[in-house]
Image 1: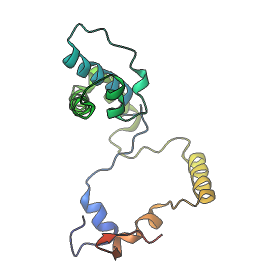
Image 2: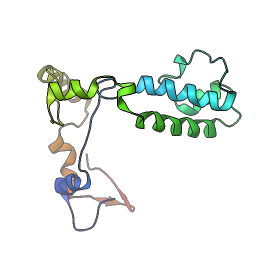
Image 3: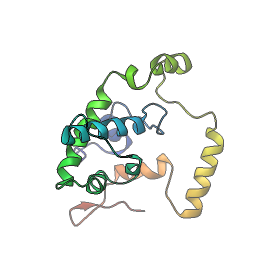
Image 4: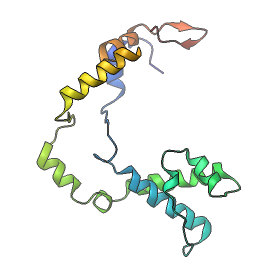
Length: 161
């Protein structure tokens, strides 16, 4: 929720010191973290020597559904354990999961935080065209203009587009 008296994009920018948008595999290899953390979670429940099934089915479905498929009596609890393991894997030394990534990043981009794709112009044209044909609102000015307004209805915020 936004603090009273602070409005608009300035408030949004003050709320965050950094924003990162990552296309999977660019900075974080979530597929690898997904598999390692799921394997570790299953070994906690089933024992270190347990033969694990092929876990690729778990990509793209909710974690609780994964745990249901694996036969857990309490899939929600097993999913919470998996999430804890996922966070632990993500915090491990990046060199173990992403060998050479830091050096490659610095060599390519220095200390920059915004890294537009070399194909940015074509991708943006495709994105804007698709949004326009589909009636999807896009563009920072259009999306964030409401931050200075915050119209209320029934005690909840409603976006006016």
